[in-house]
Length: 367
Ligand code: BGC
Image 1 (cartoon, rainbow, N blue to C red):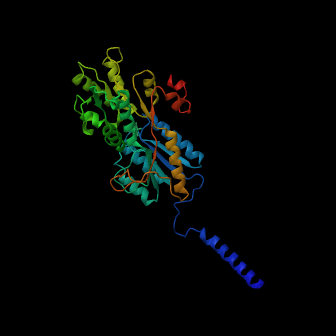
Image 2: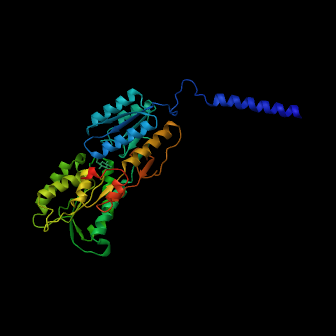
Image 3: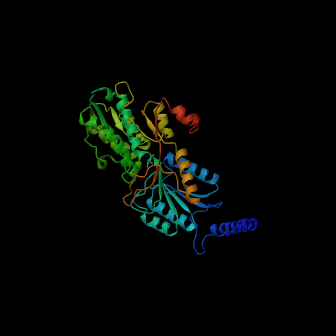
């Protein structure tokens, strides 16, 4: 009996040894997608340096990826699609294993991403969805629809529309860049929430311009928003003040404030209208403090960058990244598995806690 037992033991030992050796082997001729090694290259493509948030996004990501042991190729494309495509081609040539891309035009990367797929490179769409290609693996962003809802709810609460205030209040609506998928989500979140009050005549859009084709500002440019606001004020508000401007983000809100100032707003008989925004850019937090802009939406770029680094790590370790949305982001070819971070309401009353106490800005930066 003893002899049988020791035979079984030796057999078990030997077979587990064989398993250990063969189980770890990568079959010859194939490369492994997983397997993080120190210095693995990650490409990070950001749209532009001209907007504060993308500088923060890029810096945070580089810092966190390097802390996790990766090498990082971080590039900004000055809002030029051609530049972004050639930066991505370069990253592919240099042997990047994952590309993290905040696209400029969400529809223009099909060709370069097909090249990436041939090299077995994984792609994470950062903040903005990449459309029209199957070669995008994951999407990390904020809940973009909710950003619009937060802006609209602020207007409703401030004017007590939900408590029956009848106004009527005058309002104009701005849209983001038409080549950015996010712009449509911000718009839908805000307009779905405000529509009952527009339908009932409590909110009056004197220009009648409510469709994205009429209100979108190409490239999210402050100057574009300023020029459109100038036109609206001249054409529709020469004998009546405007009460509300729905702006989807902070760069547009900067242009809108410049236009309002030039038209004499900011005095007792011409108070600033309610003006929304998004990003909590430094200029805009200063506008909140000065009473020129009413609110913004804080999207902590540290949270998003941290999430993306987790995704990169999961990909490189051959495990599944954390996903919390598999329904919303249809890119025209597939529904891209997404992780949505939470956007947060910000105004003059909570900015200190949100932005200074959390170490996002120093007090001096906001002076
Ligand atoms: C981002 C916003 C930003 C805008 C302009 C959008 O895709 O989600 O946070 O304000 O681009 O850069």
